[in-house]
Length: 293
Ligand code: ATP
Image (cartoon, rainbow, N blue to C red; front, top):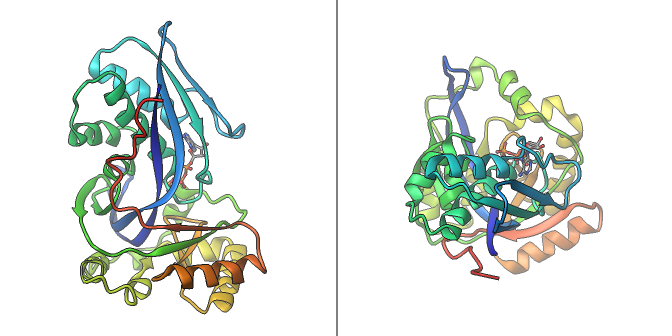
């Protein structure tokens, strides 16, 4: 049995360029892995089944689960017929804009590549992952990347910037499809924000980064779910720091340059609300596998 960690991501930027004829949207976004992870244990089975056991009853454990889809795709791609046992410990909130399902799928692909010693490169795993979902290729590599196309065209960025991330989980279900659908032509941009963000990350300008965070979806989600906007206002008034949204939401986050500042903000928020989690940037997930257990 082996263990892979499936890391969550936040969006440091998210611009939408246009709606494509195939129904997808052309995006330009900076994605960042953070130290919040699901745990994915993988093993062979003596039968030929793919079985998923997970600790979250509200998520399907059949073929609708992206982890199962990843195992099916891996077997199709490699011709391997052996059964696969997946044990999944969900720690990443579901449908939260943190790419939890995509990250589980990526961890299954990485882990099965190790389990069966198939020697596929990360690029090959990422190509495979793109068939499951647009965020899966990023989750194969983790770290930081500009994601373009429908999210699957990656420019990976190595930078020295390390920031703490306060995550605030509104208790609201947000449909990603509905938020994309609600985007107006005026939301589509030609000048994207990712280059400025990447420059600040490269220069380790930790004071500038929180002010360069940008997400075109934020105003759409806030308009559709006023409770999320109210929570963001409250977070801002308590922390006196800019509050951002990841993906199509509803997860909110603040960035802090030092652990002292992050702890101050965390304690202030915990005094007035539940569902606050302290995390930080992760730059390298290549050692995420914890080996044989
Ligand atoms: P993104 O940020 O990529 O839009 P998300 O974090 O908002 O994704 P997920 O947590 O991946 O959303 O879940 C979205 C939907 O996918 C849920 O409705 C859930 O039932 C389904 N799903 C399928 N597989 C998984 C999985 N392994 N973990 C979580 N959700 C899953």
